[in-house]
Image (cartoon, rainbow, N blue to C red; front, side, top):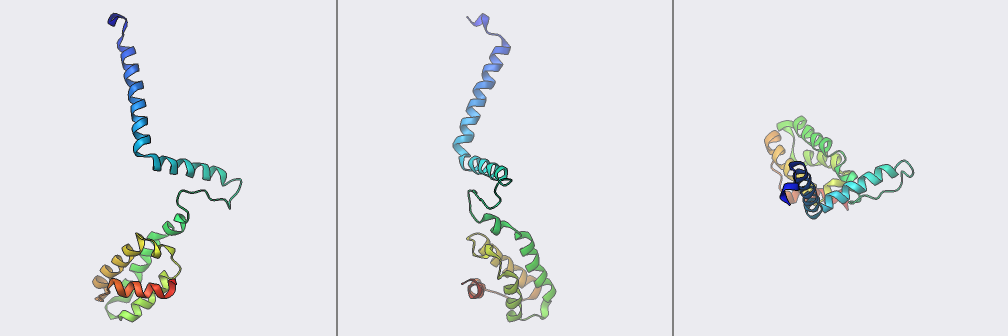
Length: 144
C-alpha cells in the first residue's frame, strides 16, 4: 500500500491538511478582525450606491481616528510657539480652542493619551506643569 504513495501525493496531502489547519486557527483567533475586514470591503463596495449608509463594526471611529496626528502636531506646535513665556491660563485657552471640536478627546484611549502628551510637552517646552485633573476640568467646560 505504501508503494503506491508518491512524494507528490504526500506533499499535496500535507499542504491541504496544513491549509485547513491554518484556516481553522485564523478563524478561531482572528474572527473579529476578519469580520471587520469583510464589513469594510462590503461598505466600500456599497458606497458607490449609497454614500449615506454606514455599516462599520465600530460606528463613529472615523471621526475619532480622523486627524489624530494633525491634532497632536497642532498641540505640540501651540506649546512650542508659546515657549517659556506663556502662562498656564494662556496655554489652557489655546489648547482648548484647538481641542473643542475634536471628538477623540472623549474617547477612553485618546483622551488620556492626549492629556499625557500635553503634560509632558508643556513641562518640556514651556516649563508649565499641568495635572490631569486640571486638563479634564478644562475639557469638561466645552464638552458638556
